[in-house]
Image 1: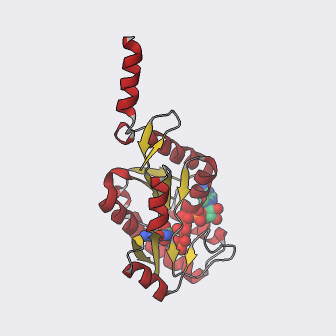
Image 2: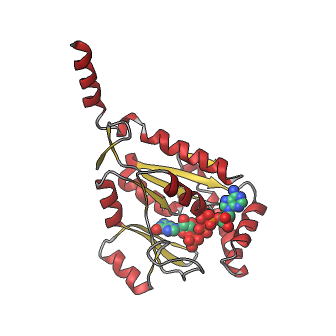
Image 3: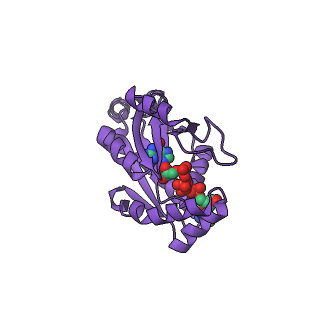
Length: 217
Ligand SMILES: Nc1ncnc2c1ncn2[C@@H]1O[C@H](COP(=O)(O)OP(=O)(O)OP(=O)(O)O)[C@@H](O)[C@H]1O
Ligand SMILES: Nc1nc2c(ncn2[C@@H]2O[C@H](COP(=O)(O)O)[C@@H](O)[C@H]2O)c(=O)[nH]1
């Protein structure tokens, strides 16, 4: 689970988690992170929810039916899973383990239940960020502007937002998504700083020893 960092110091890969009430901007920020941060791989979840217009199976989600999802759970194929808005969502284990072993960081767009499960499994390697919308009105507007869910689905997501919000204090960082550029810059800074944390830079001792040997010459 180690990778050469950009500066040549080996480090452990990390699991970078974004959570928020539906519509606050996780998907938007995740896409930007994947585009602009080398060494970061998106975890593609499995879900039983219906595909939205424009979504692609295997890119946005693995769309599966309930029996298939239950089989994945039974066979231990999911690192975490939860029921959200009456649908099941879960993180396939194998791609995450493969990415971490290959020295990549992994990005998760999952809810608070999944985040709790990841934390229980790998506390030291999970960095979690909760995204807040600037206001309830903005949140509702964003869900409508996205234009991918029915009014009934949007009402359901808005009524669940309070419960989602109640988990904000479990997260390492809180970002208010007023505008995408600023929120992206903040999330990017968090990832950059976490990549530099001493505890996960397993190659530091060796790196510093080498420096000392050079200095002693
Ligand atoms: N800062 C922002 N200002 C205005 N609109 C935004 C902002 N961030 C995201 N949006 C828009 O809000 C909508 C919802 O964003 P997005 O799909 O990223 O939310 P999400 O948190 O991933 O939602 P879900 O949990 O339902 O998947 C999208 O149409 C997106 O373009
Ligand atoms: N615990 C998990 N939650 C997940 C996963 N994949 C997505 N999600 C969360 O579900 C809701 C709804 O997503 P949507 O795409 O239907 O709008 C959102 O909060 C996601 O973060 C997962 O694998 N595990």
